Length: 115
Length: 110
Image 1: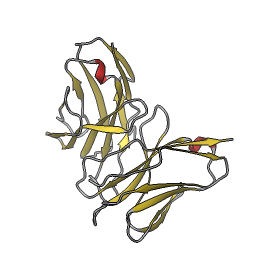
Image 2: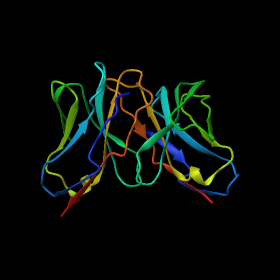
Image 3: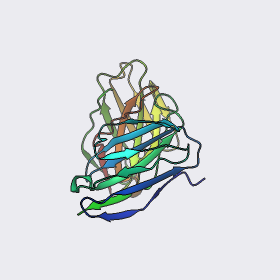
Image 4: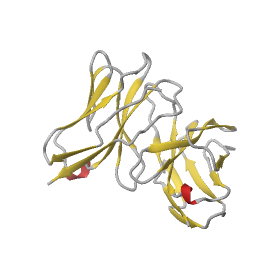
């Protein structure tokens, strides 16, 4: 199993540009998450999904959009990039949501810089 | 969601046992305690999870007192490769919004 994969690994955007961060998992997990991590800080939840067709906002959703058309894929869309969105973005998945046995599996991350 | 408090950083030497304590005073009855490890430029990785008393796996031990208001992650005989950030999380079934906090930055010295 490849686990959770993310593309691209690095990206530089100009202010106002748009892009989609790709995330895929091959573990047949229902739950998927997008986090951002600013330098020296913990992870903040952007959006999450409990299954195909179902998404909801996390802690910091402004400036982002998501979709979940399949179990495997959970892309994150930035519509109008701003310098405040410079961060490392992590995608994660789990078979459970919280409680006993819950383990989130994380992808390698996408390092995004907005200039 | 229960808020957690951890030391910001710790230093240790190779071969020593390291104990990282996490405070979670308002933990709920159904909450579990989970620890993750994050190396630089990587996503977090699950280490251990527990509800009460003691849990041990091949990587670490987790000690949880009877009142469950704190927990201690114990790493036996650390090596340089254990240098990482360690996060303590508290959540229950149906928790989607884990709060990772800033974690504890462990530096292992030779």
